Length: 272
Image: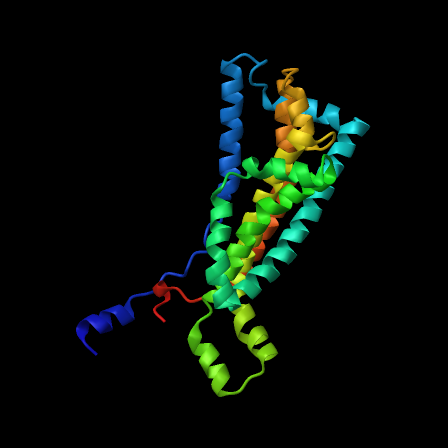
């Protein structure tokens, strides 16, 4: 042992201090945005930008209306229907497409081309084939989310590492075993990320459809208040939309984090 090693060995080590948790960054951001909203509302006319208190008051008044509650319930039901379809149909289609190289090479460019087109341009087609009402709204919401789901899952399925597949072939593993033990664990992180991404896209597509063709729903309620310049009602409904989206967004983000921690690939920074 050298002199320096001996000195280091004799140096007392301070006990590790517990990490300070502090205030969560999302809470800090939320407080900052609320303060900025209040400051802007104080500087401009309240008829243009209502204060947070005014928006919440108008929202509470609207929530006492049976018609408004029915509209909110219709939006939640349509969103749930469309999103379940996105998750199931998009995941299965993307999985099968990613495993079939010929069909992936043939279909993927077309899917990317359609995805690059602004969705609102294609909305008249949904009106033509599905008519006014829930069918066109749910269909457009489904369309807004299913393409990203298919593309993300198919890319993940096509990118399964070849070495485990070769090892499985040498061990003569059955196809169901290869899928459950190798392919699906490799796809799950991308699938979890796609779930989080497509939820917002599906919700956005639904609100747009309700604005154009709805006779109920939060999108319809938002657009109905625009000609009447009811800014308090509009901002309050925007707050409600954010609240409806917040819980699923947090849950899907937590799910994605846990799935990536368990099934995610090792990064270069790990040194492995």
